[in-house]
Image 1 (cartoon, one colour):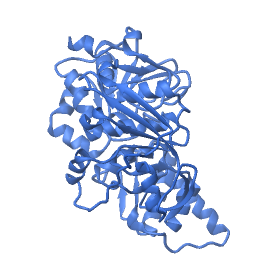
Image 2 (tube, one colour):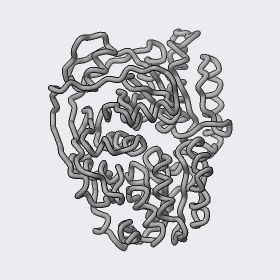
Image 3 (spheres, one colour):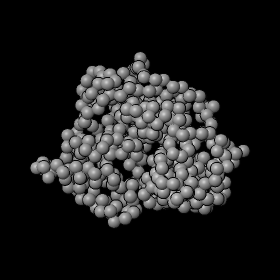
Image 4 (cartoon, rainbow, N blue to C red):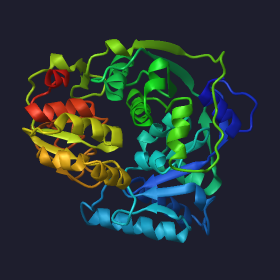
Length: 424
């Protein structure tokens, strides 16, 4: 069995599963945020109207909540949603509520690993499509809708169809000018935005062994953009070292069998990869950066669960150090703990000295809600994961998806720029 099949088999108390099996699976961890949480609360309210009164949920200690999409509160509705979420977590005794303006908080798909809330071998579900991110730790991680999350909160289990697994072997030594964002954009461009529908995308190979956890998380995050049910990487010594800095909780990693079967196998020679961008209006509409060299832009954005982890900020700052940006540049670290470390390392000062604005952790600009919404006809190069029409603001704005170092290089020139052309 593959790692995904073994995790689902263990969680459904079966000796073996195969793709296509439907299994009723116990859940280890559940996540909600300030957008999905109110939707789940609405489901609870509808159930109560039908006479189903709930005094408790399945296991408050396995549930965690963060405020990330509309903080700082963008409007009155956002404020009311946060109040409703706070009242609900108090009612059901949920202690892990990461509140904006009260210590550690941040983007849900960052807290999941930054706080070691999810561990290898676990089944983790969240009320957000990019829950796939945490598969980089060797967990089965998948997004669910409001009703399914509500069901899990009451019963601690949910059904899954066991997905087929696509294997992506990444070979060679990664050049310094290439990041995981370039790799996953290239893959999505090849397989398409529906090429992995309800499948697992698993990453392996010698390149993976060289990648730190922050880079691995970018790969699994954007499996969502290929339609995958989940993305996953088998845990190893890098995984263990990362987690041991954050928790002493024991965990039980799962490794796939040597004779595991895959629906497709792809091999990429990463040392031959070019810096890559996704053009409007699809993550699959990819191009080498140099093919777009000179495309003028209005804004550079370094943020989101995909592009504002600590390593992302370090590499972007390294390129910006001692230079000045030529366009509006915004940097939003993905969690408060990352923000604090970036201050300690002098990274934030580097961004400020370059002329960029550094703001609080939030999903606001990524989803076109607040904290930097694009206007009509504006063009942005961004470290985010989606570039559909209207994703970051006006429906006639345009977003190019790129790695943090491509975004930083472009900020310095005011045009889409290959970082090699600045370094050299």
